[in-house]
Length: 521
Image 1 (spheres, rainbow, N blue to C red):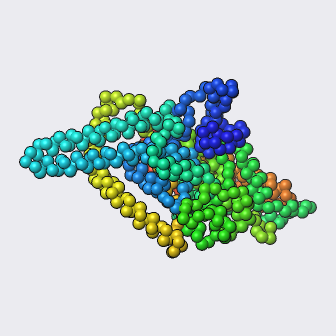
Image 2 (spheres, rainbow, N blue to C red):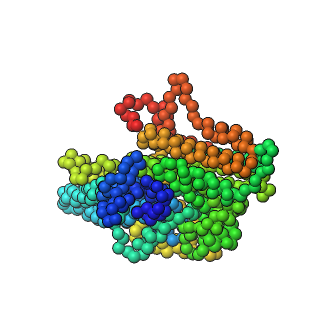
Image 3 (tube, rainbow, N blue to C red):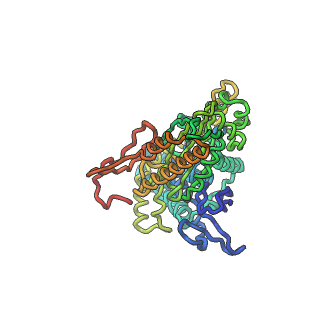
């Protein structure tokens, strides 16, 4: 069944779209007002625009409104890239976020020009025969900062990005046709099944890797008195995928995804695979690969384009995403099966980007006073940042020409260009800690439920093919019991998020002695 918002297919009885996180809309009356469903509830009348969109999307829209540096980086490394891929953003409508980023850039550029111009006038007045007029320039600069801050918080954030007002359909529409076309391309890539990564870690866009395991099984060893029934990786893959889809958690998406390094597209792939992933060397990689190529890659364990069965669970309305990446490799002699699993975590968006949930429709007198004081404090930093951004704008056309020439040379002559995406906006805005204790518990629940279903399904599949599963049972016990145990008087506060096999978490109060009223849960 198709989602009413993104148009992609879901299971027939879905409640939340596994692709975009939006609630299902059900039309019970053939033209009357549609209804929405939520987990554990009966259908009720649609709540209006605020019922659509995930929290993660709203928070990222707010982030680009509030953080000019992050906004510039997002537009440069995602929107303005000509040849690089775009990484999928689980739980995020990336095109909508960038639309708000473009609107913020226009407003921020006007502010920068005015504040720098007033700073130059103020300096001139300060060293003139009548330096007392400097105060007037200072007041004008403060007024610019105050109006821009007020416009950002209550013109955009409060008016359009609160839970009860947010609607992606109302996102600012770019006036430039080229920009609109580029946003449509990004939306298509965001919904694709191909990830082209630029750096060491392959699972770009899905957060840091928090756990991995792998093992090899002898699948030529039959149960006593039986002969092994041969099977293919495709048959195993289909069986596991079907079982995990019935997990029963809202927000579960099971799909196939191919991961390949952007450095390997020009040299290291076989011609048919390269043609499917990179049909045009002087354009960004494809966003989607077909089922035939997926089947081919599953049977070719040495290809540098690796297919994974991804099990993604989106919780907390898109603010927490846990993804399990599964891969199966059967040896050429059909006697050994390699099973690999990787877990990635997208933590909640940073708190400072979530302040939109605390905004009223209009500011109180006290809030106006705080904004006025904040605007005064930000004048001097804004001048220096504005000068830097204005210089960047002035030099941007020339820089873009040189960048394009360099990249074309790397593609056509040097053959060293990296097509991989260099930024995931969702990862850039993610915090390094959970915001609620229950988020940590839910992360464990999502991962362990998926893990258990995979292991049980694997055991059942092998048993159906008369394979001795005693070795698998031992490994399953080790994997499922792997964890942290706290006994006696010990206390564990896992408020930091570690990523990577040997990574060191940026611990935030590893042993927390704060008062109870400082804790959230």
